[in-house]
Length: 210
Image (tube, rainbow, N blue to C red; front, side):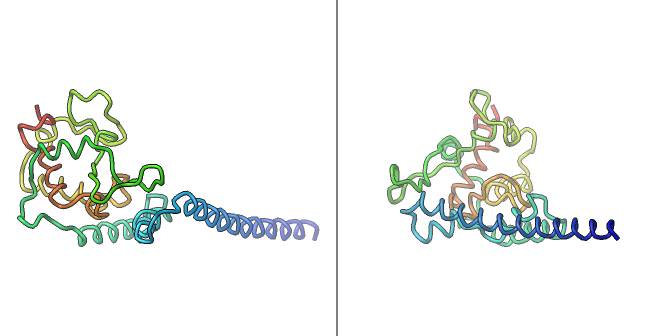
C-alpha cells in the first residue's frame, strides 16, 4: 500500500514538473520576444516578419532540433525546390568578378539605431565567414566545407551548375535544416547575384580555381 502511494506521488511529481517546465518554456519565449522587440524597436513590421519571425521551415527545424524525420525533411526540401527562382536570362553562371565582391562583402541588413541601412544599401554574402574559397585568404572560416578548387572537384556540368545555384539560393532544397543562409529565398541576394556567385565558384579564371 505504501509502495503504491509512493509510486502515485512520484507520478504526480513528474506530471507537475512537466507542466511547470512547459509553463516556464512559454514564459521564457514571451520574455525573449519582448527583449527582441525592445532591442529592435525601429524595425518595421515587414522586417519583423522576414527577419525575426520564424517561417514554416524554420519552425519545423526548431521543433526537430535540425534533425526532422525523413518525411518532414522531404517536405521541407520539396517546398524549397518549388520556391526556386532563376535569372530572367536563363543563365545560371554570371560574372565571377561580381561574385568575388559579393562573397567578400559582409555588410548590409542592419536593424540598428546606431547604423541603419540606407535605402538600396549594398549587401554581401560574407561567404568567407564559413568557407575557405581562395588559397590567399588566411582568415576564412571552417563552419562550412572547404570550397577551394571547387570546379576541379565538382566539375562544370549542367548538373553541377544547377546544384551550386540552388545550394546558394536555398540550401534547404538539398539538405533540410541546413545551417547555410537561404540567400535567394529570403531576398537577400537576387537571382543574378546568385549566378555571379556560381561563376565565382566555377569559372576557371576565378581565384577559387587557380
